[in-house]
Amino acid sequence: MDIKQLKDYLDSLAESLKNKQRKLLNARLRSLISVFPFNEYEYILMFLLDRKIISFKEYENLRNDYVSSNRYLDLYGLAPRIFGEIWGHEHIRDLDKRFVKPDRGIDPDYNGQYDLWIDDVRVEVKASRAINKKIRGNLVAKALQYGSLEPMWMNFQQIKLDICDVFIFVGAWTNQIGYWVLSNDEVKNNKYLSHQHRGGIEYQIGITEKNIAEFDAYKVEPNKLGDTVLRKGKKR
Image (cartoon, rainbow, N blue to C red; front, side, top):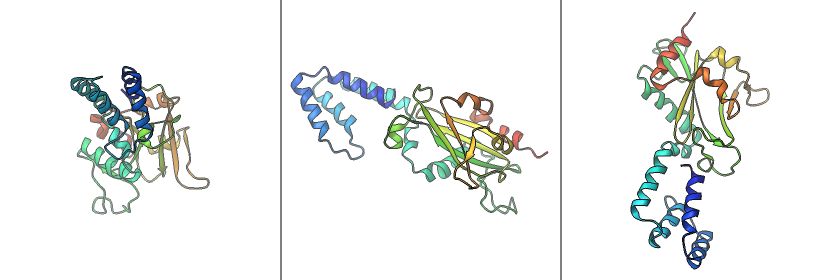
């Protein structure tokens, strides 16, 4: 269940209200001021619960259904740097303890140019969140579930070539996290690689619902992430 399905469901429940109560709910929603964690959905649910349109057990079932379908929705509320650098790097290290933060003790040439190190392989991590291209608003409002038929946009930015051996792309949906592992050459030769800024040294790769299947060759299960990076980053 995504946010649109939740809203549609609540709207259908509201139709069960008597005409006077339905008008009252709509009037209050128009003047509602939301402050986290109190928002329009919480208000509608409490209104319906108070009018005995739903039971507490039905509320619990609805809540469990929505939470289980959106277990990664909180990632959409993170600031870009926290999501990409702090969460992204720690997430990869949690998946395989062989990934470590580099320093000059293990790489004398290290100067912050890449993110992680694993057995002499230099790794750059890029993370992006899948959003609905048709919706305006903040990232949470645009958040998409994996498998959605809505138009998707996921952009891996600030790619600098030749600074690492392997790239890990981490893609987040509200209900799933996916991983793609590409060597530096595979990124460099990818047909979707483009300049992020005219004349700049940074690049980007955009993944949409139209081209995501073309990245299936690079998909990796989380328990095979480290071994795949080592295989692709092996020095020849």
